[in-house]
Image (cartoon, rainbow, N blue to C red; front, top):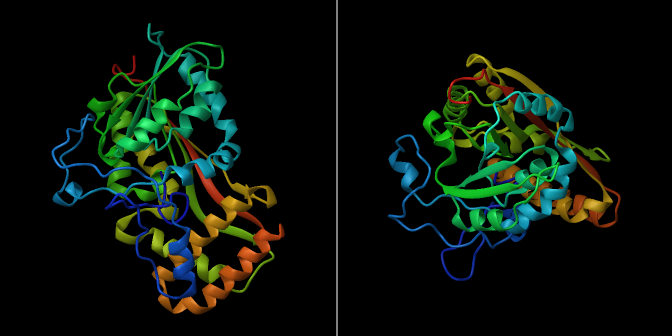
Length: 340
C-alpha cells in the first residue's frame, strides 16, 4: 500500500456501483476524479472479527477503512518489480540461511499485502519452503492475493499462504512471534511516525528482518522540464503529509526507528522508470499526482489543468519519460528467542 494519491488509487463502494470520491475543483480536479479506478470490493461490516492481534485502536479506527482498487495495483505491478532494489536480496538471503531450519520453512508476514504483488516478486527469488501470512484490512484484496500467490520457491520448494484481516499499522510483537521475515510494499508513506515505531518495535521484538519497499521519496523527474514541476511536487508532498502521515519522510523515519531498536539498516533507491512502454501507468500516475497537488493548493487548479493536459498529450505521443523516486529499506533486526 502507499499514498492514495500516488501509487494507490482509492475506491469507495457505497452501492453496488462504485463511485469515485470527490476531488479538487477545476480542470485538474476533474481529471483526477475521472482517473479513479473502481473495483475494490465490498465494505467491511461492523462486528466482523479481525484475525490479526492488534494494539487497542482509537475510536476513529472503527470507521470504515479506505480500500484500494486492484486494477491500479495490477497496473503498477510490473513497474514495482523492475524498481525494487535487487541488491538487498543477497544480505536478506544470508540472514535467512542462518536461521534454524523449520519443518514448515520460513514464515513471512506480508503487511498491507494488497493484491499480493510482493509475494509474487519475492517468493520465487528465495530458496526454501515458505509460508506467507498475508495481512490487509480489505477482505476482497486478501482473497485476490491468496488466489494469485506463487506456489513454489526459487529451488522448487513449496510456498503456502494464509490470510489475516486487520489494521496493519498496529502490529504487536506477539502477532509476529516466530516470524522469519516481515515484508511490505508501498506502505510506509501512508503510516504515521507512531505506526512506524510500532512496526519497528514488533519486528525487533520478534527478532526478524524487515524488507520494506517502494516508499515515495518526494522527488520526480519529467522530460522535458516544466516551470510548474517544482510547485506541483511541493504541493503533492505537502498533501502526502496530511494528518500526520509520513509521506516522503517515511524512509528516513523508518531508518531511524529500526536503528533505535538495534537493527542494521540499509536504504537503497528503487525508482520507477516510466517511458512509452508504461504510458497507461504514467497517465494514471500523472492524474493522481496533479490532482493531489491541486487538492492541497486549490489556487493551482487552472495552471495545473493546462499542465496536466500538456503532460498527458506528451505521454500519449510517446514523448514523456518520468522517474518517480522511491526507497527500499532492509532492516536486519537482532535475532531473538522468538526468531529462533
